[in-house]
Image (spheres, rainbow, N blue to C red):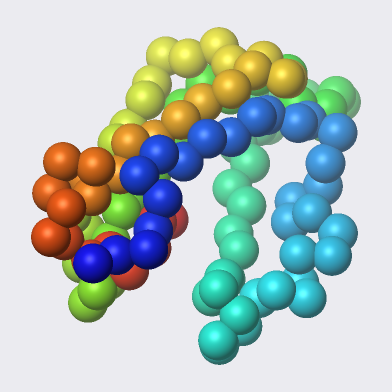
Length: 105
C-alpha cells in the first residue's frame, strides 16, 4: 500500500522565485522533500535582456520506485504553457496499485 497521490497537479505561477521562499523549511532528511532544483534555459543566451518567464516549452517528470529507480518517465515537448495554466501527471500507482513509489523528480 502506498500513500502517494494518484495524480499530481500544478498551476504555473511565473511570479514565484525558484525555489519559492519558505520552501527551505521543509527540505531535508525526514521532511518530505529531499532537494529542490530549478533549471531555467534562456531562449537566446546571447541577448539576456528580458529575464521574465514567458512560457514552458518542455518538461520531464520521472517517477521513482522505493529504491529510487525510474518506473515512469513523462516528457512533454513543443509546448507553449503560459502563466496560470495547469499541468498534471498521473502516477503509475493509479494502474499498478501494488507498487510503492519513492517520489518524483
